[in-house]
Length: 292
Image (cartoon, rainbow, N blue to C red; front, side, top):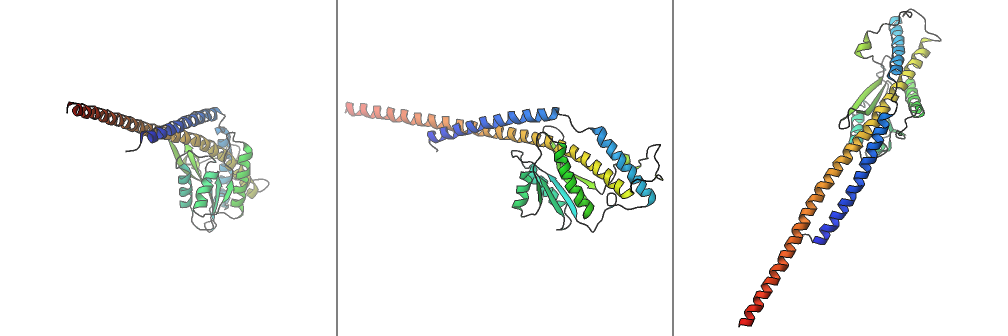
């Protein structure tokens, strides 16, 4: 049986850790709520960017032209983007992101791009090669999006056959999903598959300055808008995952604290009972000796 002094020290240590966890949880909840109240990406802009891209897609299909934005170069390598976090206390989400991203690879030539230090650490442990970008800040700026989307789109335009983004998606405070989004080659959603161009625009109309440049410009604009949307939900999911992980840690520490407290009092009572029995036995022995 462990000494009571040792049990008391462990109890005090766990109680101290529990207080720290509770402070971190409160701070993360504040971050989560403040980020949730910030202006999210404008859905209307994303929709307009996608409508523009669909106009170009209709034009390419009408003229029977093939462009990497719309048609996969199956022999070319893939670009796989992983949106992880810089900070910990998010459970296994970063490890799951890395593993799912690796499942998307089709060859050793595929290029991995990691956003966030935690995802990078997992890939380093697995001896994988990748390009690193710092994790997303609380104030997601267009500068963060622009740098990443320019790098990724340039890779795609020059030598890649497809672009895949693996990221967490916020559903609720208790639920986050891992999403695998194929950005390129662009495939319209079912609702846009039968997209008809605006009334004043026809597939026969020319694209200026050239179909190639218009396709790439529309694709890059849409990709940037979608990335901003992805980064927003990823950051929200990160905060939610951290809140839930800290809550689980807090509950786990409280359970251990309760167990140690029970063991401590059991040990204290056992020690007291032993002392009382020894004192009682000593007195009885002393009385017997006196009678003799």
